[in-house]
Image (cartoon, rainbow, N blue to C red; front, top):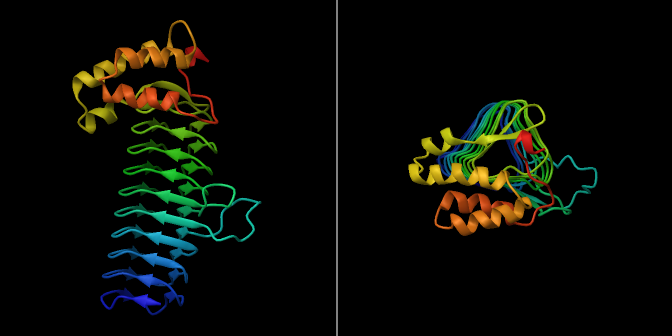
Length: 269
């Protein structure tokens, strides 16, 4: 066990032998830190939070009461094998959040990037790969093997089906059930989600170039309407808008290998 001298630990907390705790951490009352856990500098655990398993938590991440981080995955095939969980820096894991490590049948590791906010009751399943600056609103659920790009917002009470890919900058509305891939910067809407357009507000908030946004809007119609298959139309758009980074993000996403189909505008379903 390695505990930096600058860390403060409440007398009721349990730090199991083998844990590594960095500088200036704060471990609150009735918390549990497992024997194979590494907490980066400045991590704060409020009361009744649990971090266990082979888990690494990045610097300055905060974990609120009743969060369960690193317990065995919710996979009936899991047989106790050694798998991993990594959570980045400056994240906020609010009350009741659950995050599971990977499985032997997946990548063996679940990852959450930096500067992520997981609100009350949010869940990230085994082998999920979550990017930076991602927000999971209250009780949003991300199933196993899901990939979520940077700057994605997943609305309250929504669910992302296993093996789905959500492109960077996308937004998923509250109560949506997402069972197909969502393009970068797309908006997934309704109880059985359809592609409701582009997340233009998110792009503007992140300072995207106006001309690039206009090009993305024009390419959206060309990709999802007209003759040929979706991938043929995407390839044509690549030829026409190849110098637009936003368009390239969408086209690359559509042309990449995926085990899922793609979320489409309602009129194209």
